[in-house]
Figure 1 (cartoon, rainbow, N blue to C red):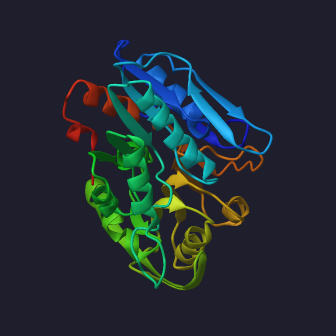
Figure 2 (cartoon, rainbow, N blue to C red; figure 1 turned 180 degrees about the horizontal axis):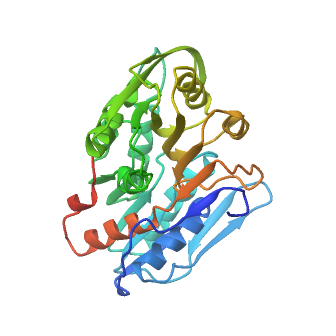
Length: 331
């Protein structure tokens, strides 16, 4: 149990790497802990970065070690506030101006990914804008995990390695040792992901059909599938306000589920999310550390699985020009 009341597991995979003098791994302030663990798993010290904040809130970043001719890996999730995105862009620019050989942005959580299309008049396609900004800043490659929409990869003019949280979650779920496991999705948009989990584990699947009137608020929901007597696992990529997730968990219990837990890659957990999870029918919410949990919101229902080893493995394969396909359990 860590200081914020959640259980944290930082080593889903076991790997050991030799230090690589041609590589520099650095992290933005939003992902400093995760960046440090990735560097440790890779076998190299985290490169020093200085973050200076002026009295008006403007900030400056500087890389405190030489990166000339080096492979530079910058770890930063772009969850709110938007300063996290700006810091990533500035670190990329700093590395480019310091004559880095290649700049790889590791973005465990790619913010603005829910703005992947023009679904209403006069709205921006935020994910495409972010892709353009990263490319303009000087990124040569992007590594990210569980994009909200797969097509975002096509927004970039540089290679994107899109890895999947299933490589972390499936071994954990397999260890539950229940004969009544059932995979479910809290909305129809996650059907493909849930179906992949169900096929890999050899179990049945259920779907929650929801309707919204406004963003972050579920108007109605119904369950499609037989969940009676089952140990249900809800699968999703993002848990924001937890409204959909907790309502789906309640409906599963109302339909006779023996237990309900959830796995979500990115714990955004904004607004009343922590309170909703604590008061919900969920037995457990399993997430990754792509976004750090808030220390002022303890919740013993939340289990955190570390993703540092997975990213360190992919980085090593990238540097050594090896295939990373073996590290995808499902897509």
